[in-house]
Amino acid sequence: MSDLKNFKVELFKALSHFHRICIIDALRNGEKGVSHICEILDIESSYASQQLSILKNKNIVDGRKEGSQVFYSIKDETILSLLDVAHSIFNNHITDLKSTIKEVKKKSKKEGSNHYD
Image (cartoon, rainbow, N blue to C red):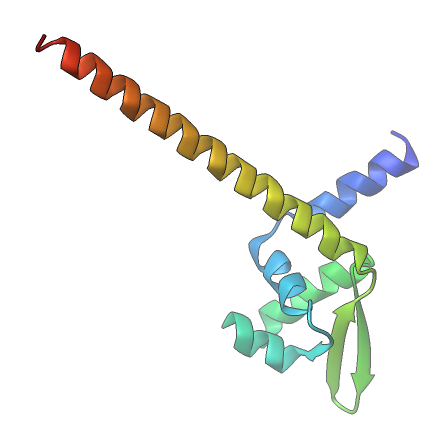
């Protein structure tokens, strides 16, 4: 496997977890301490630290120690663009589903009225 493909696989593995995505979204507006992240996401500190460690090991977030606290930030803002693209894909999917449901209802109504003609 090429280095680039391997990198992509590892990146998407790191992103394939609900709370990791939530952590990245929580860091959109800047650096936050672990306790603040825990408060925002309503998760335990040890669990947040575990997820942050995975994100840090994949170079998605950066940690800065200040006293006994660690503050995290997005290492490369491009990751936010990637998540925004995923959001757009989701919206397109929802739009397609709504359109399909509308067509099915329309077809169902049309077929239903033919039974009574």
